[in-house]
Length: 208
Image (tube, rainbow, N blue to C red; front, top):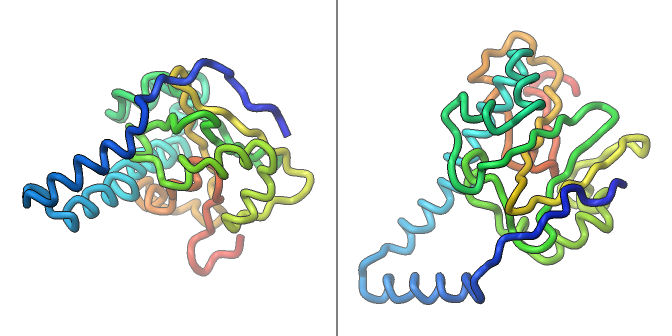
């Protein structure tokens, strides 16, 4: 296993941000200014739908357009911006290509640096201490817990996100997708596959 890459200083995080956020949320709910169900729906949308759909479109474009893929792997930031995705938490991006011989896994060992413009809000498990530590120490075991089994001869590369550099995994294109449109391909791409904890399953009826 490779050591974590790009060891830059992480961003300074205010003390107890989650606690203060929760206190503010509780106050707003108590005063009837925020509907907790609506708030949960908004968070779910950004965590699982809106954000990851941006990254999925980037991946799908790379699968169908060799020129775009080359630009993405060479300098991800401008390539991602071509599709209209840029902004805070996504200024300096690096795309990592998964292949049959190499599987990339992204973690932030000190906090929760994450490419918001293409993946939305980071999932809870990404920010957890167990993931942040074990992804480096035992990446194969962590992948197995996510249901991702890799052959022993597949090299696992672990990349440490920082305030300066954030990563997007370009998953392997699954078999049986040669006739699918770019939009159909994007629908196959998951948030977890772009972090590297999962692979993309072949479409139903197609053997992997």
